Length: 125
Image (cartoon, rainbow, N blue to C red; front, side, top):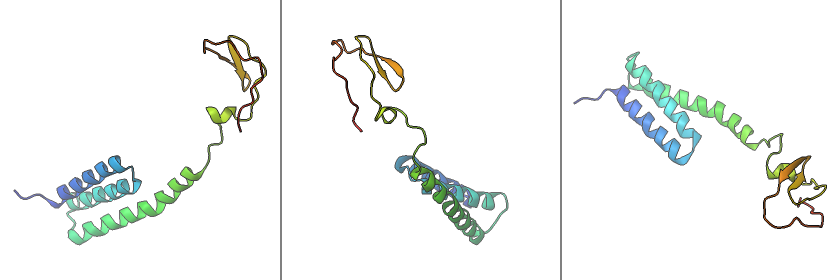
């Protein structure tokens, strides 16, 4: 049983894809795309071993050089809209009642089963 080169490239791409899922390293995904490109060169265009390795290296390097800096910029950027607990930081509740607790301009249900505190709370910053 003789396995063609394009099939080896696809097996390599699958292994890199599994590695991407397990480790969450996006570079492995970019290498997998390079392996798929090499498989296309081998299977469709009938390129030799040198052409396959060159296509793999060029596509993988180009993806890493272009996509990685963009991903790093997006990861470093802070979200413009605060959500969850971050949205409540620094806001002071106006009053407490037995059934609701106003926070950040809206009324939230208070379901603790205990009576509401009589003092004003100050959220931590």
